[in-house]
Image (cartoon, helix red, strand yellow):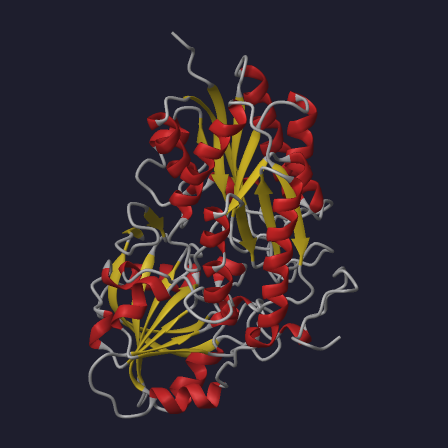
Length: 498
């Protein structure tokens, strides 16, 4: 009887906003937030089972394929500024020690992000792969899954035998992407050689324009299935624009039975990128325009205003108040907003109790020009311990850890605005962020979310319209205004302009 191939699996996830304000230390990787706390050994499989995570999809598919899994470690931290060197070195050492202790292996799977920048290393994933390859040698197959927003380096492509990438934004296919790595790994185990091709594109795409339900993402990803039918495995990364290093840009990878087939596919994708470049410019509403929409009479489904530049899922502080202030000044009514990260205000609400009114200076700690605390009276509407089970498609099966959470309503003003304040940063991408505390989003005229596109999966079906809004935040979507220092000189931040 043939022995089952032994495959080590591990995950190390971080999306780094080089313009952010707080770094990711070891504690941030150890704690639970929108994803589970750090998992070790068998916990890696048990603690992610059934979730829409790449490692969960890989583990399930690999077990069904008869592979014997050796789980090492999995961890993730909320997007932020740089990963500290201490955290990076500690986690890398745990992964390498676990692989070394695993005994004879036939292959390795890594669940990485693709946009990790540390205090001293611009290409975090490339460094993880370099160290791992130095440990196991050049011949052991290593397959990797990456986020759609990955900034991929040539080093990563060289060091990994295969890279699979999410194809949807919102990321509904995370588990599916992990599972897609299994048959490729099996082909490598069977001795098949996959020839690689890699291309990097010349223009950045703002994150809010990377939504795959519209141009240009819709057309780009529609090009992949025909290539697979022709025998080439190809994937596209749209890049994470808040990372500032030479590989910050969209890219594609292709794997074929011949080098010629792989390079032809990569050239085809690169040509399509060039043809669609002008379509990557997506406008945002000004605060005045957003307030005017919120004040319009409305029946039926609510409008969703996305505070795209304060997305904690992209390293935002999730506490900027520009949109809140604009709606309050305009006297907007029937507004629901979230999630505001302000542990002190949440704690005050819990100390006072439901129904009480208190004065607070909410948020405004980003340090971004134009942002300031919002001083007002608030009434405590509802309280929660912050344990929130996701109900939407993207994170369904998982649990968000929000910390002490409060639903507050502006008091003593003509505006009728209810907002949810948390003690741990979480991107507002699931209706459960509101319903778990007793609020019904569909009962409001306007819903404001601190998210860039992930919210579309759950909020889209209940919305009459969706508008991105340009409010102050540490995740700018107007890329021409970002103070990049380390971009490759050939990369454009604005379509068609140097």
